[in-house]
Image (cartoon, rainbow, N blue to C red; front, side, top):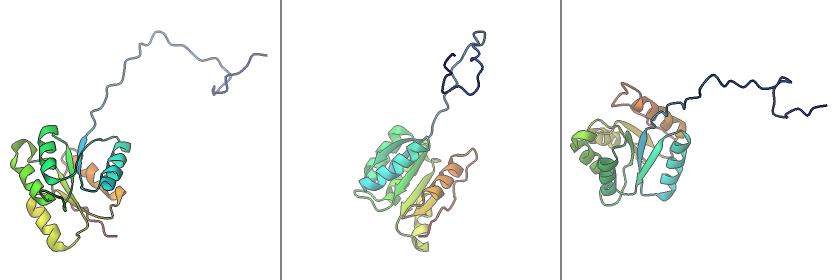
Length: 162
C-alpha cells in the first residue's frame, strides 16, 4: 500500500501545471514611519508593533535627531513624543513643517499630557493627531490607517484616555 503524504488534503496526486508560468507578485511598498521617543522601551514597543503590522520603521530619541531623520528619510508618518531632550516634540514638529517636502507628512503627538490646553498647543504646532499615554495600540493603528489612507485627514484627534 503506497504511503500518503500527511500534508495532502485529498487522496489524489497533486496536479503539476507546467503550462502556467509563475510570475512573482509585485511587492507593495510599505509605509515608512518615524518613531520619536526618548524612552528606549517606548521606541521598542511601538517599533515592534508597527513592524508586525507591516510598516518599515526608523527611530530618533530627541527632537534634533527627529528633524534630521525626517528630512533625510522622508517618512510617510511621524509618531512624535512631546517631552524630548534637546528640542521638544512641538519644536521639532514646527521645524519639520518648515521643510517644503515634509509639510504634508502627518505628525501624531504621543504624550502623557492630555489637557485641552496641551492638545491645542500641539495642533497649533502642526500635529495631525494626538494620542495619550499609556498608548492604546489599536487606537494608534486606526489613526495611522486613516492618516495614511488616500485622502486621509490632516487633523484627526486620536486622544486616548486611560
